[in-house]
Length: 277
Image (cartoon, rainbow, N blue to C red; front, side):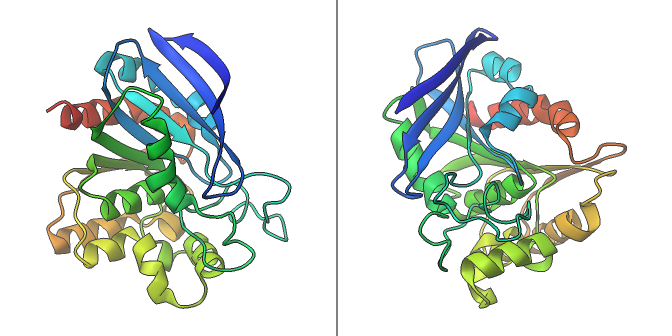
């Protein structure tokens, strides 16, 4: 591992690291905020959305004050593998390929070699980081935005024993039913939609997956609300299954980090309550 940057902030250290990933076959970068203290400390994983990397939330997410207050480590991985040898969307579209890994393990050429973000986030990165940082791996939470909200929901639901709380901002709630998800899952996994179910939060809940605490906030002025994000489908799936869900719809807010930063502190307060109980 190589530390490539470091800043003092809110009585802690904001750092950026690079390491070679066995899962993606590429160098990968992540940011990590480390509050002062000896630890071990609870950890919050944050997954970013389409076109993003670790820098978006690190520079615009306004999470450090709340993390310092509660003593939370905050980790933001990249959204996909990077590099000249990594295949990209042949037409250069923003919603597939570089920056759009969708937190899946691809099974189709040419994507399968590098696009293994599920295993990277679920297994490789936590295993690596626990060796280097004072993390309490018995107290973990996961959250994300948009495509990363989809990642947080599905990873949380598949690994419910690991995460005490799961939250998302404007997540892609039913990717098997929206254009972004259908494009990505179809190309990464192939046409058999039965293989898509483990990457769809609604279908996971319908299949019996549950988490201890689930929170979603959505901007009512989000241009992707109805055709891509579909929080109503998640609400319906949770109600039918008896899965508790705190769902907030906020007038005037869109899909941007102006929205995320407005509610980041409330999400981290909520996670802290579950992580320190």
